[in-house]
Length: 117
Image 1 (cartoon, rainbow, N blue to C red):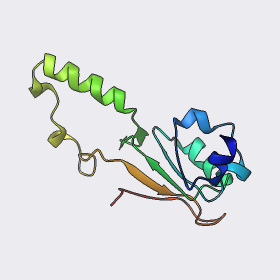
Image 2: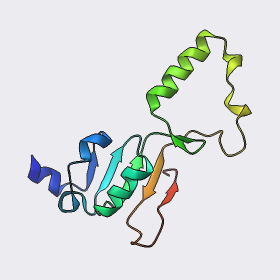
Image 3: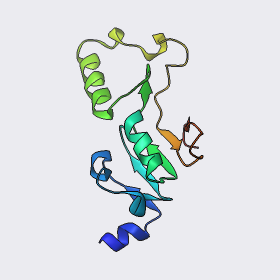
Image 4: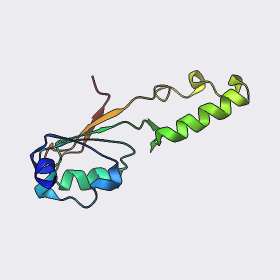
């Protein structure tokens, strides 16, 4: 199975399951995961990961676990939908989309983020 992992172009796994892998295993790979914070993003960059596709949205500068959004939605539905309307969030914070982060831009470049197309 390890050889299969090393031969793969795309790796799909919970972010914490990838902590034990290094440059040899992750270099050049596309990682599909969720809830990647800045610390782990820097680790992926150091390990040569080409692109991270993170299914968790960022809101107010924080990565949100999708299960938190589900819990929030459930609370709102139970407490009448008027309690939270995403349209009332400040400009630039009203879309909750997955992020694609390109980390192999070079040692001095900062990661670029964007929504997958």
